[in-house]
Length: 123
Image (cartoon, rainbow, N blue to C red; front, top):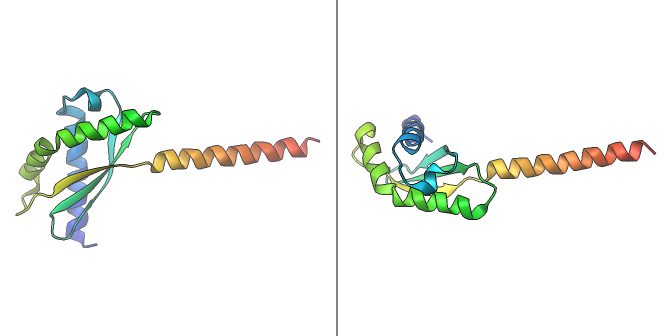
């Protein structure tokens, strides 16, 4: 990945975090803690895959947040265009990032294994 694309990804990520936190009025988005984790923009700047982390236990609530962001896609893209100063402004594709859930699940499994070994040593 080129340095230019990395800079654009970081700029889009930062701008989206600000916009989602302050400008989005959709209750589906406002009722949850939403954070843009990373952005992958194509080399031709046509598309940007935006990985979003949502602090909710319920998968239906997480999907509602993605729906709310999809609904605000036009506003977000227009706002990013003002900051980006490139010929094209990428179309935003929101994806639910589940890496935090995955890491927490692995941590739980490791904790269960560790506590199981401790019980076995006490016999």
